[in-house]
Image: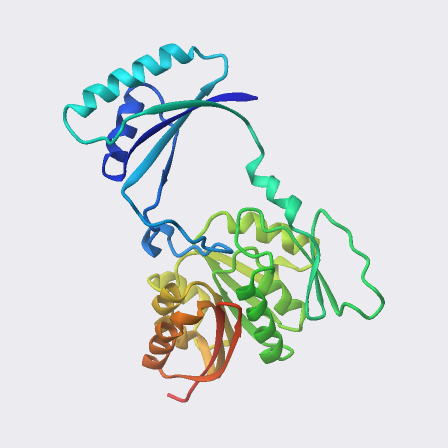
Length: 320
């Protein structure tokens, strides 16, 4: 289906006013494009595969809305330009120019799958659920089928590879694993297929749970072995109680350093003495943030691994 795309060129300060103006005209679904950095608070701590380098924030912005292709462009432009003119009388809206183009509806949720293909992390073959790969005999000790949906975690990102390697290095048969920010469930599933007895996963993103359920099914992993709960371990006593105290051999978290620093004070209470805390998703120039947070609660550094610009730091819980 074709759509008319209207782009209003304005300023970051005027974004809200322009959106309110459009809502008043009946256009209540909009997109915003600006160069303002996204803070951890705005992202909710969610961690995408790659954070792109953005141009310098110059205060400019674009507010975009759509109409069906058969809509009268002239009438739409006239009403929007008139409303912008009235808004300009009360505030600076930048140029206020409106440009129009035609766009075709696309399946944005699934188009990325064209670029996600089977690959190895050491001797683990990670295979998207829509592909079938036949590894050479002896080439793969484990085949993991994964569809992250809109949750984080294909295994392709350096931070996830680092977490996988650390998890397999320190995991012992029968271990209980706490998977914080579980995303697609990839780390928890690998833990179970590597001998863990039970995984408890938490995430603050509702989108994670349909992906986890599907990935458990396609990998023949029982839901009773991988419990998942919505919530933030850093500030939810009810969730902390549900997780359980002093009962995990390993905790793993693949999140940005600033969010790791926030959740780290809550981790020791859930680990056994001598328990392992695997952290990843840390930019190499932010290692100090994680080291400071972990040091404050008595964690001992036992290993640091790096890949590209990403770091994984493994800690051990000392005696009380």
